Length: 370
Image (tube, rainbow, N blue to C red; front, side, top):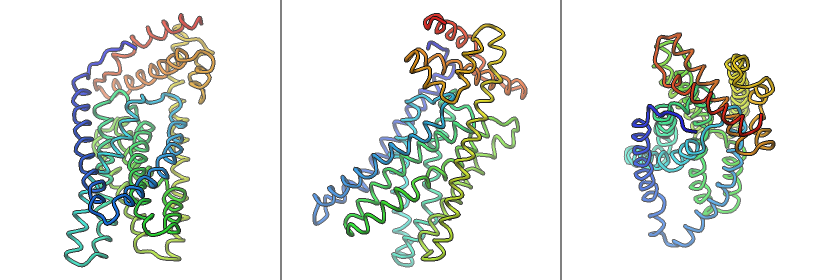
């Protein structure tokens, strides 16, 4: 779709910083986890354990990714943005966090012993550092790819992809370490991280994504600038509580905390469903006048507002049908952004997309024969 790009320079700068972050973070990840096995007594065994960890972690990640993709039904985010978020979490955020957490652990261990070092690294350093670097990736999408970041739902979607990328690489590391301790330890680790708490990192980081989305949607200047700090604090707090319970609680205390954690995750998923339904209502409200204008008809309105509109369009008309649904949903969201900006007397690039999108929709309707 040939649409204006008034933020081309910003997007180009974001791409440069993204690549730089991946290169540096990937290099750190390589130095911390791939170089040390070379000096181990059994390098082949160490790399074999990593390979086993990857075999256990990566297929599971593909399953986890279906959840945010299903939730992002009305206006699916572009593949390059989602892939970028996933890569940032798995490479850049993991690399920077691994080095800083290791340095903190070494420093704390030198002061009060290895056990204290591990505790400080897990309960203090990891929540602050990991949520910062994961959140940095989500913020990057919101700032450098602003037109792909509409509000709260998008914030949670990008946060979830970033967090799943991070958690997957982290699981490879944990699984490979557990392998050297025996199959029973490996089975317990996979059960805990892969089945009981796979949504831990997505829930933490989604607090920041929610806040960034709220900042995008709100008309209040105070909320716009303060919400991200509150979201980061919530992400750190939840991460700290979970790591703290896993590190210091044994037996009954952990068994009490875990059901509460399940309730938190269930509440989080319910919130997502409510927010997605809200987005559908927003799209419908801003397409009603397009029916009167003749841009679309009533049946097409129902298709675009359907939770499974993209699937229906793909089945009936292939790629053109999908593009039609996405362009129409994008038109509605561009009008929504423009209306909010006008109410707040602010400028927005969304207005520049309305007319080109209408023209594109008309062209697609002709090609589809509607």
